[in-house]
Image 1 (cartoon, rainbow, N blue to C red):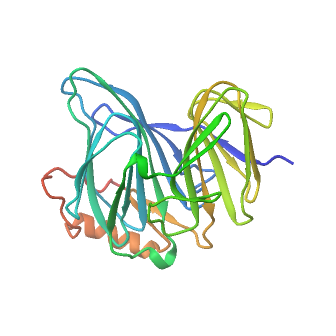
Image 2: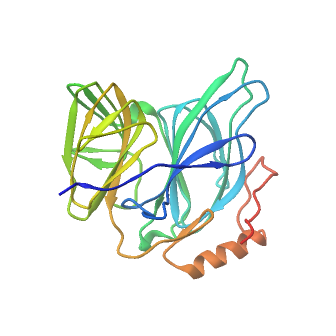
Image 3: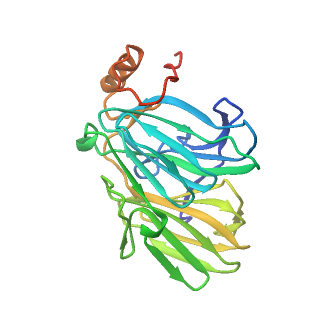
Length: 289
């Protein structure tokens, strides 16, 4: 029996300001992998002169966001007063909880620079959906490394093997980035209540005789043995964790086990009841139904 549940190829989505992302989650066939409910691959896009990525102020509830860059830099601002530059290999973990607003901007560059990274959302467990919003920034050298012959893994968030990331998560999950040499194999067994997925960011990786290229998200069955082999030098992300017992509703930037809370968040954003972001005046309006 195959360990693979399905393979997701992303849909390209234009965020405006000449910036596109490839969205793998949610998918019509698979809304979540463990607690992970949203997966955007930003870029790669070359920014030069006055070109920039500009994600104006917008709100979130019921989730935590993780921004992880491969190249380039992004300026993060939020309604808690945080303002800092995210650099490659660092972790930006922002817990929205009962409500937060933020913006993300790149910088005009001369000479040109390439911007690329992954932004994802982690749904919060029902008992933590309304926590106070908070923000954590973790430097690259604070993240645990796992090294074996031909493969190197960095634990971005959660727990994996005997390692634990300093990122303050709210549920049982794992999120890693890795590099693997050609012809190297790797495998691990997921727990019975866990889902897992492999996302290829560079090169080619073989799973059960099929070769998957960049931007492929290979989703494994719950409790499966995750096993893969590099067909070339490759880079990838691993993600997964325990599946929540309740369904999650998602509308725009809002996630909740409660439809009523999402409806209230929509009204609150339309009526200016979310907190403001210092040094920001532009915002994204609620999308039309």
